[in-house]
Length: 226
Image (cartoon, rainbow, N blue to C red; front, side, top):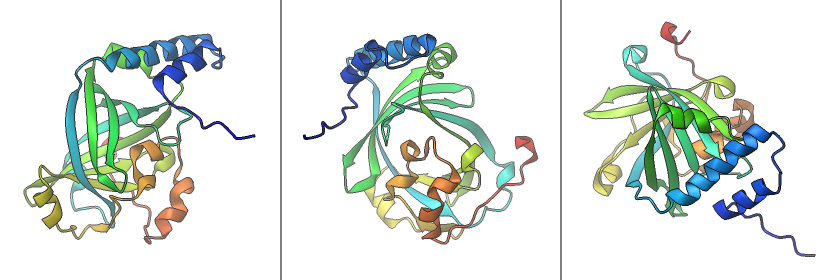
């Protein structure tokens, strides 16, 4: 008998919730509200943008990184049973937002379409306990050759992983950019390094993939994190 392909559509998720597949009633109620909200939100005009960026594994931490501006990020991805969820709510310092990402070209993960909608703290808190997968990191904003390097120092189960993103306004800027000396290799086309793939994982889960690049764990001596 042919196995039915799993459907992660919003309508399907609402139907699953109605069939009582989530046992905890409080979580179930929040989940139903969330997915019904998303279903309605599809009719709202999101703030849409094209995200064009390069992602690198970091070879060594730039000097005085701990003195740079930084923000704590908590990213929560839905649905939990999707192997690569593309819907996220984010706490960035004291700011909150919901984002849906779409791959424009399945052969190019460096360019994505983003749909963003701002949330307030109350809305974020009402959704954060839904069944999901999470990523916790500290992002440092490091100035480099007239650009801002967004250096993500992962926390919790992913501690030791450090990535850096550079964003570009045009394909021309993207094409001519040269990898900085503190970077190990370009992993922009590696799906396993995307936030939606890292969420819910530990360093051990991705260690074999990282060893392919001879990546070594990095830790920042930042007393303000303690």
